[in-house]
Image (tube, rainbow, N blue to C red):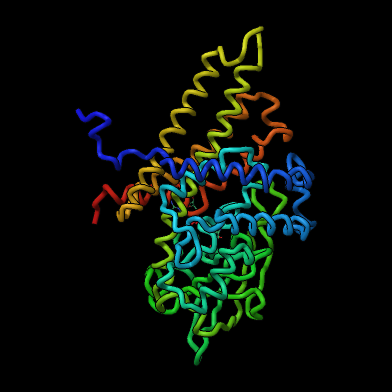
Length: 417
Ligand SMILES: Cc1cc2nc3c(=O)[nH]c(=O)nc-3n(C[C@H](O)[C@H](O)[C@H](O)COP(=O)(O)OP(=O)(O)OC[C@H]3O[C@@H](n4cnc5c(N)ncnc54)[C@H](O)[C@@H]3O)c2cc1C
């Protein structure tokens, strides 16, 4: 049997000294730059916080957008906003393993806080500007859309899902047809995150091929002020008063050929490579959120007494916490292993799906356990657990449902053709 000294270095997914320094610096940044804003604008925190962030239509208020912009710009200056983006684009060029460990750490704190706006992922689609690979971008595109996003100056949406096609985006109905030096896009997108306040979108539309072909779907930058694009009805989820999603209608939307990302017909194909990374980050995010709730539960189990004893002395309570502790650790190693594989040039499709599947299930379970351990207080909105319970649910849908992750996993071992 190998001992620790001879085990291959690649099997150690613990944070390196460098990552631990980044985590410490991130904590300092939050203490110095984010917490003072939380103290100044505490009307946006706690049980009424989300209500105060939205206007009567569910759109983020200009006042809260201002706070968001401030945090994003400071985070960009300090190098956090774009840590995972390629260096050629002005990002930090961090690998998947390092980034996801830092991302887990970011989310291992009270979820009501403003820290969530520091890095992409808070209801704006993991992966920030759904970063196209630098090789697929022209200098013009880098300067006009990507760099300002990395600097925290622009917010983007992504339009892939349609009312009739979600899990099956290669069956999309949106089309783009060439007309001289322009492309004319038609179609409707839904659930487009950040659409109510987006400055531009990455829109996917079919330019050739048949239903089911991933080839033939192209991607375009579309500005908000384009007369052919219109943000439709806002969409709210699970009791959140803030609408992060909306329908987006494209009606003879004309964009110059310079707006096409990468090669014609390869837009979605190239983009799918990024969705893998996004799924790893979602899993890391879920672990961070779950770890924070677990720690709150432990504290409560030690201090809350019933029948004259701390509730943690009961085996039923211990059992809930022990199970959750094991699940957190299991998911942590699933996502770290998948991230490490990706960093080492592998394409760990099923491992990424397994991490995302378990991550989403973990976050839901952790919120449920947190409520149960805290009893009546757990369901009251004075604590964040009921908000976690609601918010966690969407993680089993977004970036591929549980069933789509299972489909990817099953395809790894079933050879039925
Ligand atoms: C909060 C949130 C944010 C989002 N942000 C964006 C965004 O910014 N941009 C964007 O383009 N989209 C976004 N989406 C859309 C998201 O990607 C889709 O909702 C998701 O892919 C599922 O598609 P659907 O909702 O159409 O469900 P459907 O595809 O209709 O699925 C319905 C049910 O059928 C199951 N199912 C479908 N096909 C299969 C199959 N082959 N095998 C087994 N089960 C199957 C699904 O698992 C699900 O249970 C967002 C969604 C949410 C909830």
